[in-house]
Length: 434
Image 1 (cartoon, rainbow, N blue to C red):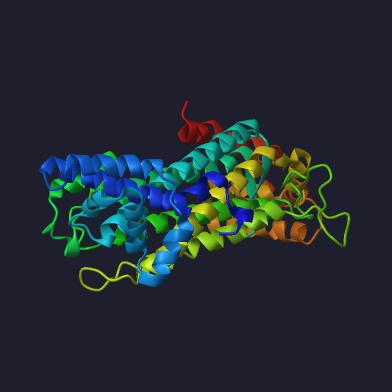
Image 2 (spheres, one colour):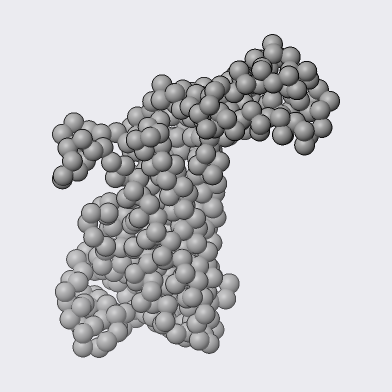
């Protein structure tokens, strides 16, 4: 992972030092449980903890051993034996490599989830604050990128809040599903290790025992976890794309904060580009790129193969580090987003009142005109305005067929912007609670 998109706390979870420390904890907790069963001397279990915790693992030494033995867990155990001494013969009793690797990977994913959940909480707080600020800031709503009917900028942000609140729930569920431990030995039968060892390690590390682990923890759990990260990334991209559109020169209803001394282009000094939200779009693509290989990892041969291993060494740190960075960046964008209510008002008026066409249509039908005729009458007066030929309300008032059903005074009342915002409180109560 490149430092540019790495936050220290998340990156530390995936460091070799952190991994080896988790491996030690797994082995030491297992030794404790084995000591209670009389399989391992209590003094040996104590020594493993004391010397292991006191030592600094030599990553270069472990790498050198692995270069010879071609096995990462054996390389670690060899180095651990150098640290612990003769009592190290009681390490890894009845265990297999996957017991260490899979339990560690899940511990790392749980730790990563906790950071990501905090990120989402920070984003939710920023979205709520800005939504409340712009609850009544009227702007145009768009469908197919074309002016539709009025909404408020606060409602736009409330929608994003509700979406990320769902993301939080999904991640909480994914965290719970991934938080399992397997200490079941070769092919997962517990033939050489008592199931109580797994229960002890799981409890000590804040995990649940995997009901049936074969020799690996089933990868459907991981597929769901990375799929959840992919959905969160898509939600990030959706909001980032909205902001990118709103910052377009022709729109300019909102834009990323442009700091003093910042430069937008190496060639054009006037530029203020939406670089952060464009970056978020790219980061979202990177996170989603982990989803498909995670799905493919579900299919393993018999009780174990390692076709998933190389994939997870990449997607584990990459997806979580990228998403951590993206969530924090999006929070910063929302927190400092510059909003232009005046431009929102100007854009509302660009179509000469056409945004009220549905109200006119409904008024005609309520007045007894059949829907097909009502639609024809409204569209007949709307299309000239679309071409820049007049004002919608004026044309409607001049149409005798329209005013015979809906008088001019009533037509004027149909152009009230407040009509479109009368249920904003209801929406906010649903999203944020009363």
